[in-house]
Amino acid sequence: MAKIFVLVEHRQGRLRDITFEMLTKANELTEKTDAETTAVLLGNNIVEHAKTLTEYAKTVLLVQDPKLENFNSEAYRKILAKLITEHKPSLVMMGHTSYGIELAPRLATALGTPLATDCLDLTFEADGLAVTRQMYGGKVNVKAMLRKAETYMTTVRQATFTAEKPATPPNGQIAEVPSLLTEEIAEKRFLQYVLPPSGGVDITAAEKLIGIGRGIKDQTNMSMIEELAKTLGAVLACSRPIVDKGWLPSDRQVGSSGKTVKPKLYLALGISGAFQHVLGMKSSDLIIAVNKDPKAPIFSFADYGIVEDLFKIVPALKGKIYELKGQKA
Amino acid sequence: MDVVVCVKHVPETAEAELRIDKTGKAIEKTSLVFDINEWDDYALEEAVRIREKQGGTVTVITVGAQDSESTLRKCLARGADTAIRLTDPKFENSDAYAIAKILHSAIKNLHYDLILLGAQAGDDGSAMVGPILAEMLNIPHATMTKKIELNTGTAKVNRELEGGLEEQLEIKLPALFAVQTGINEPRYVSIMGIRKAMQKEIKVMGLADTGLTEADVGPAGSWTTIEKLYVPPVEKQAEFLKGTPEEIATKIADIVKSRGLI
Ligand SMILES: Cc1cc2nc3c(=O)[nH]c(=O)nc-3n(C[C@H](O)[C@H](O)[C@H](O)COP(=O)(O)OP(=O)(O)OC[C@H]3O[C@@H](n4cnc5c(N)ncnc54)[C@H](O)[C@@H]3O)c2cc1C
Ligand SMILES: Nc1ncnc2c1ncn2[C@@H]1O[C@H](COP(=O)(O)O)[C@@H](O)[C@H]1O
Image (cartoon, rainbow over all chains, first blue to last red; front, side, top):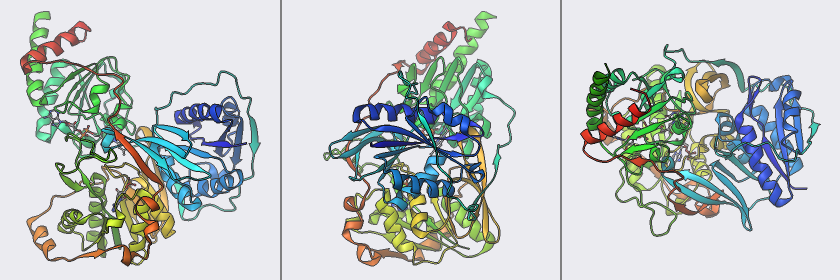
């Protein structure tokens, strides 16, 4: 029986959403090809996770070892190389997450298995596996074929497939496999989790957010935006480059490596709408985006779009809001 | 500390209008401005800072056409000591896997304590050259690196996880780290740097110098081949507000007010 392997992602006692997204996609693929979905779960004291996964996968391959307490790509690589060689799955799926990015390319190289990363879709075709990816920061989609092989490997983008519990539960079996790790991985050791210091403002609690991006160009332009925020009673949030430059503290960053926000208003100024940013704000009630590039991806997520120079809109808008507030008072 | 930095010469596309070319498999590049890949800029800065603190050398290396020379010059001006350009028509249309093989063929003959790369290339966004190269060189690696603290024989690194969380690892040297943006603040090029860079020589290598065969590189040596490029389908399109800035501002303010937010 052909198998699709899904590498289960979990951290600090929680199964991560990407796991269920991948399992849903794997089940969709196996339905069409009479293959079977196998969840591969590595960790320590995680039988509860394994039980949860039996509701999504026919088989849960479980490896438990105190040395797997925290993710370690080298430990995972050793164990997965053996499991993949033994089971010869037609496809191995991992998240295009910090874990998948660390592990997949190295494992694929060791096994000689073709790999495509950050996939938005996967389809088995006559000549092999076809994938959909993006290039140039999401401005172009790509259909690519993987070199024909017995096993393909992919990492898939987060929040791309919608997680759904199978209508007919697969009543999966848990198959526990002994860990082959004889000692700690000496060349790469997990020390601890670190949370960057808080800047004191909780953007997830704000009703109105103004999100600023690289389009604001220079730190001296910050004051103009701050004035608008003050007039509107909004809190400043931002895309990653603004934090990288040190213009705002890291807890103001919206996106996959920052915060997920859901304000009543998200006003995006000079933000292109890269997937990693959008992931953190697309559920906002009202999204208004100002960007001088009519093709900016942010316009596919915004309710209202303005193709203009933000430096023309910001002062005018500040004036208008000031006026409206005056009328109200 | 001898540090090797892999840099890619990529088009700046955030503000550019992209057109798919006649082959349907690439974008038109003639009107685009090329520069060092954003992530590699941080990798180079990190390498130069390490050299400034501990001594040693910084070697930058790229796989690219002849015009990637400008990115190497920029790196030399910013403090790299030597540069290697791997150029061959046969290298064209290599995917990240084939590029990693080409880089490996040159780097395996260099002395290094540390190899730094960007977390991903802004054009293909594969985020895989680093770990592949580490496997080929048989050295430990870390990706998404936000902090590097060097000690004797080991490095303490912070890796970025999701949602603002990081993990700290201890890794034995020599090692390869793929760095994430924000790890440092890249410096500007100084006039002195530019002058010095002009005198430095860039070593050029082709397929014959790598010990690889035609089957190892280009589409033949790749894991993936591009079938076609297309404009991403828009599931939803914003309603565009038009007019003078004043008129637009009025419209925005009215919408926001109608939601009871003013
Ligand atoms: C692993 C990983 C995690 C990441 N996590 C995050 C994350 O959590 N959050 C995040 O935001 N990013 C994240 N990123 C980065 C992300 O991929 C993008 O690089 C980033 O979001 C781009 O920010 P930006 O839109 O501000 O800049 P750009 O993409 O450079 O866009 C700037 C925009 O401003 C517009 N503009 C310029 N001038 C003006 C003007 N005068 N008026 C109006 N518009 C103007 C331009 O047309 C352009 O669209 C991550 C990347 C990686 C690889
Ligand atoms: N053609 C290239 N030449 C040199 N380095 C490269 C090249 N392509 C990718 N890299 C390096 O690998 C990193 C990750 O690229 P990628 O895996 O293509 O996303 C980049 O940030 C560079 O440091």
